[in-house]
Amino acid sequence: MNRDTPLVLGIESSCDETGIGIVRGSTLLSNTISSSMEQHARYGGVVPEVAARAHLEALGPALTAAVDEAQIELSDIDAVAVTSGPGLAGALMVGVGAAKALALALDKPIYAVNHLVGHVGADILDDRGEPFEYPAVALLVSGGHTSLLLVRDLTSDVELLGETIDDAAGEAFDKVARILGLPYPGGPQIDKAAAEGDPTAIRFPRGLSLPKDMAKHRYDFSFSGLKTAVARWVEQKQDAGEAVPVADVAASFREAVADVLLTKAIAACRDHDVPRLLLGGGVVANARIRELATERAAAADVALRIPPLSLCTDNGAMIAALAAQRIMAGFEPSTLEFGADSTLPVNDIQVP
Ligand code: KG4
Ligand code: ZN
Image (cartoon, rainbow, N blue to C red; front, side, top):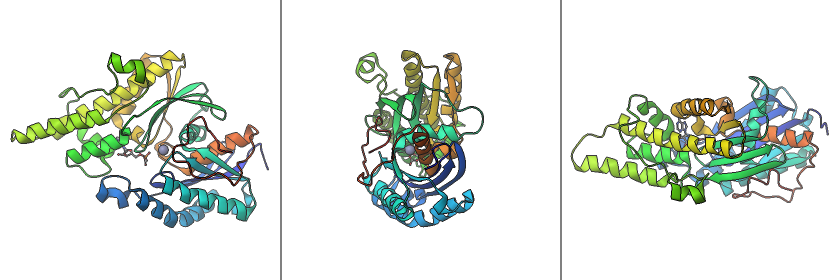
């Protein structure tokens, strides 16, 4: 195997995006994503069974497209990479099965890696300047996860500082959009509505931010109380026969989410004396989160990195990139014994 600049094909299927990415060392060659988002719209959230079936249908065409775009032959690759977890069990199984089949058919080694660490690895592929240095704090926010990681070394030392104890941030956006009568996925809709609203109109709660919570949950998040607070506030308006000021509610809610995410992320940087913050996940598209991240990072003398959105949302390129880094660092491949692990801990960067 070429360990200097390995050609790696990555498969990602942990949620509703079927991603196939191809990298050569730290260089992105292709990043094909097929999303089943539309099929989940009428349920207001990702339905695991629907996602799994959609992966099955999307994988073949996505693989062909990725190989074509990278202008390689499948037989050229040095290794196959795949997300082993965390994520939706049935969805993960489809990717893991496909990756094993591909590795066997091509007689290539397989690297089964961690989805969350993959989000951090995405930064390697961002060609707008030097790759981020470590240690760094990573804040990953999507429809499926909200996690704060301390990355001392991308390939060998990642620690979970905290995560959501209930809803993911993206899920909260989706649920609040529903309360406001906005369509799924709610994040972009709320972001748009909020642009016209006053973020100080309503003071919504910042979950797990009171001193008594901070002792036990300093880096953890909770969005379910915030969602309930929005629902109550809207109900009261409706019961009183008043119009709901959608833009103000959206802006105030968005502010509460952005505030709590960045307060905790910057606190993690400060506590660990780490002057670097990396953002990842689909919620990073949010205009206010980006703006507040820029402001707070500058004020705290923290370097901020936000990879391009196509690398922030779930994708196969980040999985290939992480595996390529592991290969270059000399790690051995996984055996074919591994399975999908929906709760894979973040310190398991690669499964044996
Ligand atoms: O990472 P991602 O594409 O995939 C999954 O988690 O599957 O994230 C999707 C989530 C959804 O919950 C969506 O509402 C949210 O990201 N999202 C946003 C924005 N764009 C997408 N949330 C807030 N503001 C946005 N602009
Ligand atoms: Zn993700």
